[in-house]
Length: 236
Image (cartoon, rainbow, N blue to C red; front, side, top):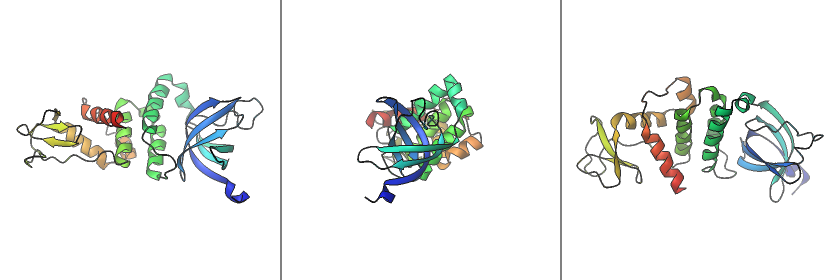
């Protein structure tokens, strides 16, 4: 490997940081070019180190890295946005950290995806509005992007009956399909038509559109989203 190819710049978001060794930090970063990757900020916790105070969790910036056989090394980091207000609001910090931790479980290492990058960025940018509903929507959009779920067809899987005018239907969480009352199986749960329609509308929009249009809590008891996320989290 040439000296030139060992060093590189990358823009990204610091999602997590963990203390390791004597004053070092292990960072989880979602980069625009590399996707999710790990890097070590050597001596970042030491008083005189140039990285001290610069590698804040949730900060968006540009780093200079050196490739290593195991984990790359961060040499310098310049933050564009730090979202320090999140760190000062304990309740929001706990909520947002939990959703990012849950999202991280599904994301493969070093797979470039600018859409997922935008989901993380817009999620942090909208931190003041984030509640359980928008947190679940964030996870749903990410899972959709990664291929874990798609829109629900409003037809019974068995008899092909049109269910778009029914008040409710039966949803099989395992197979991600719906049934009419006559064809329902043991594993299906009763769901309101409005839940299914809102779920499909969420999949048609970007996360940023949902926030911008204030498409929030139009149906107060949207249990379908939580059930689907829980099912996928148990399987992965």
